[in-house]
Image (cartoon, rainbow, N blue to C red; front, side):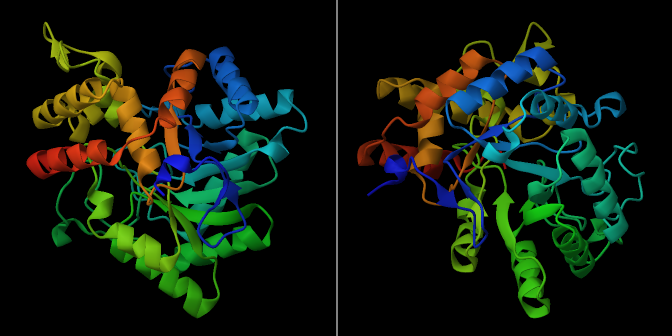
Length: 359
């Protein structure tokens, strides 16, 4: 039986948390989406029983000093307006790794020390107006890794940072204090995942339940090694960017990412992202091929892209970001479209031809 039949709850790793196959991502709240519209999306998510929500201290995106924590604040205000609803939600947020050009996040020298992790968690709890975070994730590793468009590990870029052991000990403090239930990683590698799990098991520290990495038709690098680690270690994948920043919706197929000298769509306000994986000409060229396949199968590009994530065993709960209730409804409808073996084979054939152009 394929993953197309998954509609119920699934356990996150070996944790106590159970979630549905769709997670609501919120990084648009506070920049592209005002508070009233964000609250309408949260209302709709509750109505549709999408009760796994993901955010981060650095949101909204694109990150700015003046909007640091804005998304968590918007969500906290929603919880305050809806007493009793917090218990229905599996709430995930993330502590930012080293600054990466964002000095307002604990300075440029942030090494993800225990003190920084604990302080960040307490700030998120205040903004979210909650006593506990269900899933607390490290947004990106403290050590150097090839991520956010980098393709290769470069030892020369490694910097001093808090060791993984210290990061786990900080998470243990938070778990013991009742401020965090379970922990996860993001933008992580097979090495990092194995080391977090190894140290946790040897020293009786909190065990990683999830890894949140990009996974979509243009970037299936998870399946080139990390997928085996996830399976054998009993850790769940939370795929993000299933629509490849809009490339897999078809909206750029005719106009391109830049039209009359101006960036189009969401990429117009995400300059740094536009220069990374999603802005590559080859990524758009490949997206056009997948979008054409969708239309040939009588589907929209959005439906094919989301149904692909749903069909893959490695994807436990796919993170979907939206800017309106209408987009939310469209994503829900598209996610559960069944894919037959012929369509999956055609997808694999395109990957063989195009590789992973948005790694």
